[in-house]
Image (cartoon, rainbow, N blue to C red; front, side, top):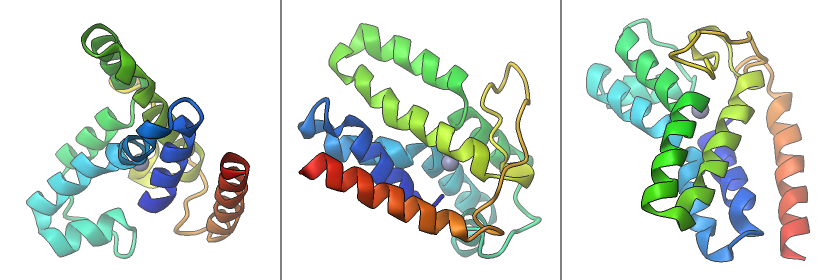
Length: 156
Ligand SMILES: [Zn+2]
């Protein structure tokens, strides 16, 4: 799933609760991919890191530490911890864990290889070998249809 698709799902997931949070929903919807992307760009260079994370050119140079950060931002354990912190610090923003949760749920069936979503990390490395968008382009067509349908429903 592309970063734009994640953002659109994220914005849609909070729109009915509070329209003012739409842009925050979009931002949080793409957030789980940003820290590991920036860290990869720092470790192997901007071009190589960006190509790796957009699956245009998989790089063997990406260090394991990038994947560990990826595992942390794609874990329900992290989401639960952040939810508790938000609940006690800024309760009205707790709703923003919905786009984050949705991001992880969307990644579980559509990532493979080392990008397979270890959704309970660090408790376990449990993951599935999903249908990656790299090898299954039809996923974008289905996603586009679903996203357009959701936004037609939201905006009518
Ligand atoms: Zn992701």
